[in-house]
Structure formats: C-alpha cells, structure tokens
Length: 275
Image (tube, rainbow, N blue to C red; front, side):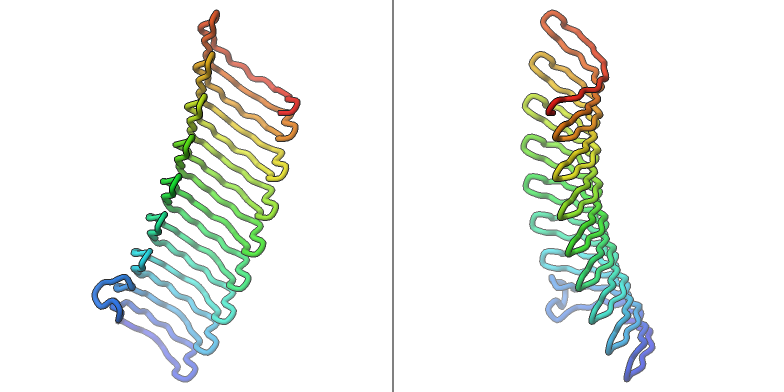
C-alpha cells in the first residue's frame, strides 16, 4: 500500500489518498470468486459526518459468480444521505446465463430518489435463444417515473425463423406512455416464402396510435411465379389509414409467355383508396 493523505483526526474534513494495492480477502486467500486481486487508485475528499462530497477514480478487477471479469473506472460525486448527483463512467465485461459476453461503457448522472436523468452509452454482444448475435450501441436519457425521452442507436444481427439474417440500425426517441415519435433506419435481408431475398433500407417516423407518416426506401429481388427476377427501389410516404401518396421507381426483368424478356423502369405516384 502506498498512501498519501492529510487527516484532521476529530472532524477529518479533508482526506486526499492515492492507494495502489493488491488485497487478498479472508474468503479468497489465493484466487477465488470474491475479488482476489483488486487494484484501486483513489483520490477523494471526504467529510466523515455528512460526507457530502466524494470524488473517486477506481480501476479494479473483480471476479464474481456470474461476472468473473469486471473492470470499472468510476468518477463521481456522492452526497451520502440524499446522493442526488452521481456521474459514473463504467467499462466492464459481464458473463450472464443468456448473455455470456457483455461489454458496457456507461456514463450517467443519477439522482437516487427520483433518478430523473440517466444517460447511458452501451455496446454489447448478447446471445439470446432466437437472436444469438446482437450488438447494440445505446445512448439515451431516461426519467425513471415518466421516462418520456429515450434515444437509441441500435445495429444488430438477428436470426429469426423466417428472417435468418437481419441487420438493423435504429435511432429513435420514445415517450413511454404515448411513444408518439419513432425514427428507424433498417437494412436487412429477409427470406420469405415467395420472396427469398429481400434487402430493405427503411427510415420512418411512426406515431404509435395513428402512425400517420412512413417513409421507406426498398431495393430487393423477388421471385414470383410469372416474374422470377424483380428488382425494385421504392421510396414512399404512407399514411396508414388512407395512404394517399406512393412514389415507386421500379426496374426489373420479367419473363412472360409471349414476352420473354422485358425490362421496365418507371416512376409513378399512386393514390390508393384504402391502402
């Protein structure tokens, strides 16, 4: 242990310490699951009775039962009774049961009682049952009681039953009760029954109850019965109830009975009746 500090013994209002040490706990004298080797570098000012201000920078390795490898770098200011302001920057690797590999970088400000503001930047790989490979980068601000604003940027690969390969990049703002605004940018490959190969790039704003505005840009290859090869690039705005405006640009090759080779490129605006 290497320690440099200034202590006033009765009130001890000011303590500055720089500590680098290797600690073996009572339960883990050599190497077990209870954090056998922590390395801590701490610089803080503590007032022991009220202890309103604490600033800590910590880097250590912890072995838990489910989280064998944890590396945390923390700098925060804590008021112990109310503890209204906490700022933490965390990067660690956690192995869960369903999520064996998780790497998270978190910086947030938390008020413990109301905890209205939380900002998190997360990038991790999760293996689910149906979604074995998921990589998510998330930065959002959450108010825990109302939690009205959520902004998420997500890029992941999902294997479904009909859609084995899906890559999605999503950035949206969600209000949890009404959740009226959603903006999504999606590019994925879907295998359907009639449309084995589909690549779609979608960016749209959705209001969940009425969801009136949708803008989609689609380029895909579809095999039909009469039209085995079709490539379509579509960008349109759809209002779900009336859907009055649709703009499509299509170039494809169709083999008919009398017209074996046909190449068509057209762009049109269609007002549908009921969409």
